[in-house]
Image (cartoon, rainbow, N blue to C red; front, side):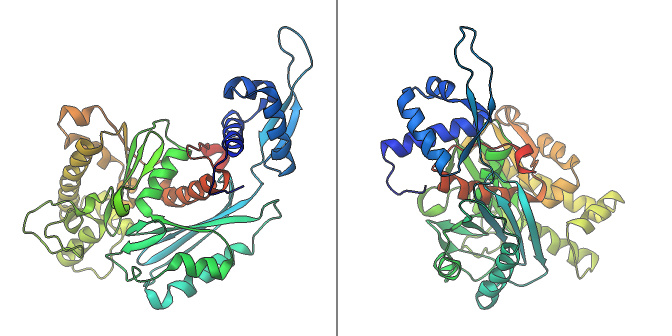
Length: 388
């Protein structure tokens, strides 16, 4: 169904399929009315969609008030195809395998590993092949692999990765040749935003701020993911917090993520508490016990991150700001602290909340990316109930 040339028929097919997905159940007559297409075109396209197993007929609906034949209702076939989504972090790999609507089949996780050019392909192959063993029988099989990169990605090409050396690799081509499947590379913050838009948010304009080894913002405006020139839109982690401050791998001095990212926070905690290992679980436990050093560092992190969020609000004017951070999820009271650090009247007009996709926002964004491409539906909307 994927096509590089969207003919009128393909556009109409995508329009009808989108309405079927949104409505969950709908008749041919209602489709014609909602889309403005004539009944003959609707019938012909629906016949094709049925033959391709993208939809199926469910039940007999109620007759209209003016009488006539009872309609046969149509619904989307969530088992038409499957999708693989992978979050490739500098020190972990998370993978999920799902049906085309995001219903999860299985997941896999590898943590405390060091990702580099030498091992990334073999690690990805192992993860993908493990999930493929769970492949159910579907009409279209696996229709794509989405790979989230913690760095700048443009048109499936890795342009810059500050915390692992993958920017010299053509991972998209290598994985495509290895598995003979479409492979889509995208920035992890962008995928988190797309996952939030597709599965959760009612807003058409949102900002998803991801705080991990770095800090990035995924931008959705009017239901479309905005990546900017060369994929660099939303790189708020490289906005200047302190002029002439710490050197950042991007070449700037004083970037926000050098002070407010998880990596920066963990480094401070290790130094001040003389710890070898720090993660969000440890931070949560120390914070719960009201450890003074941890509390001070967390409050400092909230203050610095709030500056970045304020700047992002002024730049992008979103309806909703979603925070995608393991620390902020585990200490939910920090969202209220961020709000207190945003006194501007402009910030007061925004909804600020934690992601409702837990630690899977990036992976759900990968599902959305492949589904959009395969179904030719840019403003695709699915429900979290469907995806559980």
